[in-house]
Amino acid sequence: MMAPRSPFVVIAMKSSRPQSLERLLQSQGFGSRKECRQLIALGRVAVNGEVIDDARTEFLPEPSLCLTVDDADWLWRDKLYLALYKPAGYECSHAPQHHRPVFSLLPRHFVQRGVQAAGRLDADTTGLLLLSDDGPWLHSLASPRRHVSKTYEVHTRHPVSAELIAALLAGVQLHDEPAPLAALACHQLDTHRLSMTIDQGKYHQVKRMVAAASNRVDALHRVGIGALRLDHTPLSALQPGQWQELDATQLAALHEA
Image (cartoon, rainbow, N blue to C red; front, top):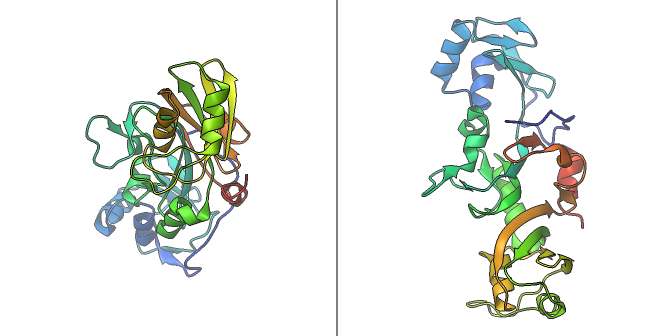
């Protein structure tokens, strides 16, 4: 289920030349060329409100191009950039082992066009997850050299103490890490809850850091990535399981804060 769409600014376009409707549908994940031709022949596809039954009809791929498939409207996108409020009980994998795939929360044609998650959240971790079919963008976002910050709300098993905060800010030594890892920011929210920001993105990093500082994580929620936060507009309208497209301003916010 998606939240109401926000205005979208196209990030990049590969081609400004007209393309056949069957090719346009295929590029958006609606199936093979043959499957797309069948959809068109059956009258199940409209372009900008007009039913088109000739798969060879050409249109200019542009952000205002509205493709209606089985009465659902979808604007053409060269690349998709999505924010998803991940609920608990979902795995960030196309081949999950124990839980439902997080991709089942997206429209099927998004998955068909190759949308992947930018990093992973554990099945029991909730919060902001970014997804795209732009491979280089996904790689750059996950690269440690980009130092993209990630902020978590951490529910601890034992009470939060000044010593715990100090240890996380000073840096704790994790097994198999050559040097201590420190939080960029860390402050107490209440007796068993703290806010913690990191930029390294190591495996289970927050849980391992809190454990190394003599506490335990009982629940973990990713509030934000860069300056993009679930508790700030425009993502504050998202409910668990909902997704929203990101515009150019929101994408730029990933490298802020």
